[in-house]
Structure formats: structure tokens, C-alpha cells
Length: 350
Image (cartoon, rainbow, N blue to C red; front, side):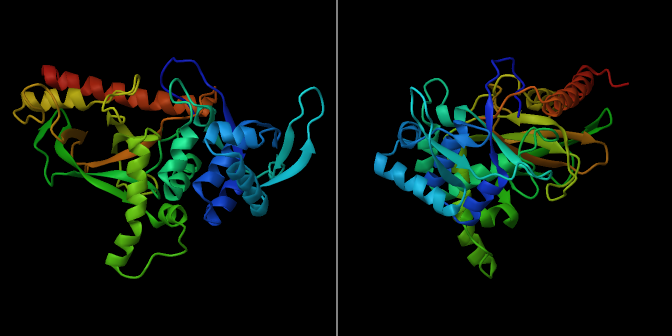
């Protein structure tokens, strides 16, 4: 994964997708997932030197819990003890069971900082463990499904996203653009991600029963956002959120748990608000603060689709060309639409 900033590029580590799927299908606990991530963080060629002391340090558990975690991972069949490393410093060695030799084998990439922390945030996995099993499984699924190449975030389909509702009719049309008022309506998701996160095989029958069963999922998503593991990037899309082929037109707004915009991830909400205010449709108060409503612009005659796509805070940064292209593509889209909106604001629309 990649960030749009010029900050130092932290490395990452990968985990075989089959190992993660085994834990999720087995309804693994947050502690078991944290244990596998810690062992994978300190591995090379799927051989880990992370023993119980590493689990104690980075997850914040005692040695009995660390020993039990390694036992659980062994019972799941995702790790195997292969003795101790020889030399001046003797370390236990574990092999992470992998299918990397297969051509179709897949891995999931994580940031080192998810395990070792960053700045004052020294134990992210300890906080993840405290959020509960559903939140931990959901976070791992978000890492597995995030598509930075196309979305720079978690695709809305078939995952979770923040739903935004547009007014039935545009408030104005200018320079080949329809301007819509949009307001957030809560979270939405699909069973494809809800079932494994909740540890269910199928949803209960009936709308009320299904809604009740999904409450832990929405609570988990709220906890991940509130604790800084993920944050929504509100995107204007070219098709409905439940369409597999929908892609972003541009980024409208991004806010993290501190309610400020991460550097390099600014959207067009401010530019569109100024244009709408000039046309007599303000969406900010006297101080220029948003009051829960944004203005979204789409090509004239096109339906307005807006969704909050979740980005991971701890994400692997590298030099992968496809990932860099994802950020570059979104910046180009943002710049093109920003130029179009500012031209309309100035009256230079032709």
C-alpha cells in the first residue's frame, strides 16, 4: 500500500491469505489474530523468531496468555514449531504455514507499525485486542480487501462503507455539472464481509433478526474508526455503491478520528461549498464550518452516488508502481474536477 505524502516510507510484512482465512473461518479471537500478526512481523521466508516475549511486549499480555496463543495457532495449523535458532542469541523458531510456492498463492500486506507502533502509539495490537473479536476480524478483512490501485481504500462492494444520500434533484446546474446536496445516513455493508467478521455461517431469517445480528458489526466499525485504525474518505462515484464496477470520480472529503484532514488527502468539499454558496445554496455556517451536508458535483444528467470508503491508518508504504498509480490517478481526477469547479466559480465556464 502507499500514502500520498512524502513522509518516510515504512516497510511492511505479508501473511499468507490462507492462514488468515483459516483463523477467520475458525472464529479466531482478537488475541489469536494479534499473535499471528506479531509472529509474521518478525519472520523471513515464513520463519519467525518471535517467541512468547514478543507477544508479551507488543500485545500486552502475560506469558501464560502468550503461551496459550501459540498453542491455539498451532492447533489451527497456521504455525509450527521448528526448534531454536543456534548462535549467540538463541530464539525459538516457528514456521508460518504457507502456500507461497503455488502460482495462485496470495498474501495480505500489513504495515510494520500495526505491530510495533508509531510515535506515542506503541501498542496498536493491544488496543485492537481490547476492541473485541469482531473488530479484530473486521480489521483483518479490511486489510485483505483494500484496493489502493483503484480506490485508494476499501471498495464499497461487497464490503462496508458510509452511506451518503443525495437529494432527488440537483440544487443547481452550472458548467455541465449538476450540484447535489448530500447527507450521511449511517453505515451499510454486505453479508460477504459481515458473516466472516461476525463468525456466522448465515444470517438469521427475518429483517429484524438480521438487523439485530449485525449490531456488533456496526459497533466494531465504529470502534475501529474511533480508535484510529480506519477512517472514511468520502468519494463521489460513477455508479451505485452496490455495483462491482463503480470507481471514484474524485474525493469529496477525508476526516480522521481527530476531525482533521490527513496531509495530502484533501478533497473538493471546500471548493464545492464556495461555489454552492455563491449560487445561493450554502452548506456551511457563518464560520465556514460544515453542518452535516456536502455539495457533490457530477456530470450533467448523471445520477449522484456518494459513499465513505474506509482507509487504513497503518498501511504499508512501498515503491509498488500499481499502488503509486492509484494515488496518482485519484490526484489527477481531483485536480481536473477542482479546476472545473473553480472555473465555474469565477464564471469562466466556456
